Image (cartoon, rainbow, N blue to C red; front, side, top):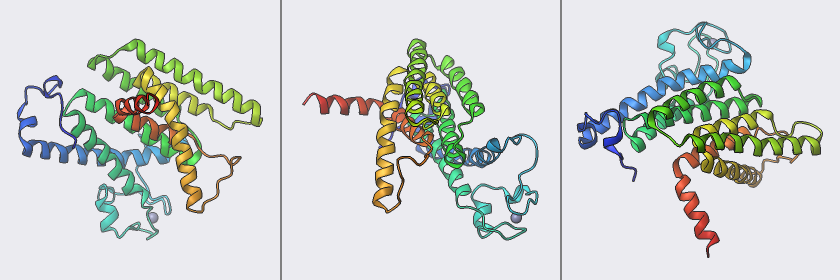
Length: 280
Ligand SMILES: [Zn+2]
């Protein structure tokens, strides 16, 4: 069971009723979830537009099929999708299940950060980190591109939040350097062996960004875990009958993102597990 922890260390410490009033926790939880869904709706736009080099600030949202500009009522997270019968109001073409799923996932991430970290700057930091991971993973999954603009934005935001929270900056600088150079080594080696980019340079930048945000230990954990997650997913897909050849290009970014997410929540447990296994 996740509990709201460190109530005295957050910026809302004057509003202690939030921690001790379950109704308050519930209301805040709902608010975080709804905010998350609204952000998720925007992340859908970011995921769609960034790889196409479209502005994310200018231009109204439109249906990808008929290009009709959508009105506010067509853009209410989740509800529009349900009440429009999963179809565009104008051309009736089907709207991918992915859009509401991203909205729910983002809502879930916001809620999770609140439940784990309370209404605090730390919660904002993890919202920012997880948002970067979600957007990066989806763009990489779609286009095999890792957006440096997305990485830059969330890395600067994350570092700024960390400055306020207080963090061991040496560990984070080392994390950035270690992650970047470890993956750079793999990148150069893979390029030499396969004579092409088997491993994107975007992945190198991604792990560098994660290093700056999570610090040295968690970056090492993420780097190692990413290969296990990749193995696990590829074996899982094989078992389900989907063939993926080793030579086929698969985006690696999503595995790094999944690993960083796991490590950001359960890093301590992973270290404990490791020592338990290897001290037997
Ligand atoms: Zn349409």
